[in-house]
Image 1: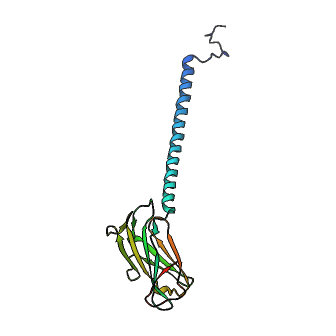
Image 2 (image 1 turned 135 degrees about the horizontal axis):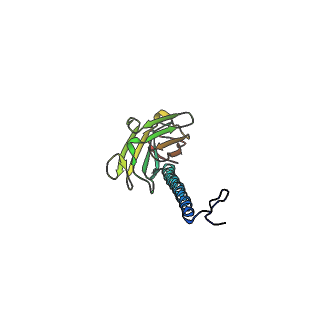
Image 3 (image 1 turned 120 degrees about the vertical axis):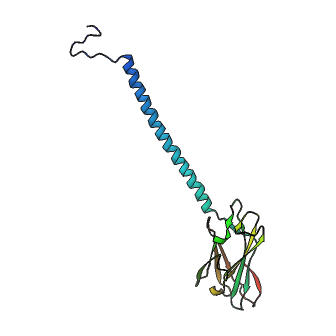
Amino acid sequence: MDRFDSTPGYEAGFTGLEAAIVLIAFVVVAATFSYVILGAGFFTTQKSQESVHTAVGQASSALEISGNVIAKASSTIAIGTVTIYLQVAAGGTAVDMSKVVYTVSTSDFLKTYTADQTEYITRDRVQGADSELLSTLEMDKITVKVSQAAISTNERFTIEVKPDKGAALPITRTAPPALVHDQVYEVY
C-alpha cells in the first residue's frame, strides 16, 4: 500500500504540521493555566501579608506607662484621682489622644469615659508639641477622676486605656491600706 492511499479503512498518520499545531495548543493552554494559578497565588500571598501586618499592629499596644501611677486621696477612706503618664510604645506609631477611651473598674464598679469628658479625664502634654497626636518622644499626663468608683483602702482597681488603634493597656493597682485626705500616694 502506498502511504497516500485513500482507500476506505486506511487511516493516515498525523503530518508534522498537524502535530505542531496540537503541541502549540497544549503549550498555550498550559501557559494560560499556569498564569492564572500564579496570579491567584500572588494575590493570596499579598492578602496574607496584609493580614499579618494588620494583626501585628492591632496586637501590640500603642501606648505604655512612663513612670509611676499616682493616686490622690479624696478622704480617709477613698481615692479621688489617679494620675498616669503615657507615651507611645517603642516602635509604635502616633496615637490620637482625642480618641482614647478610659475604663475604670473595681469589683463593684465599671465605668467608661471618653477623652472629651473633661469632668472625669484631664490630659496635659508634659513633653513635646501640644497637639492631639501623641508621637514618639512625647508624653501626656492623664488624670482620671475615680471618686465615682469609690476606690477604698486596700481595694484593687483597673484603669484600661484603649487607643483607637492597637491593643488596650490595662493598669491594675491596689489602693494604699491607709489614706490621708489630699495626700498623694504611689500605687502598685
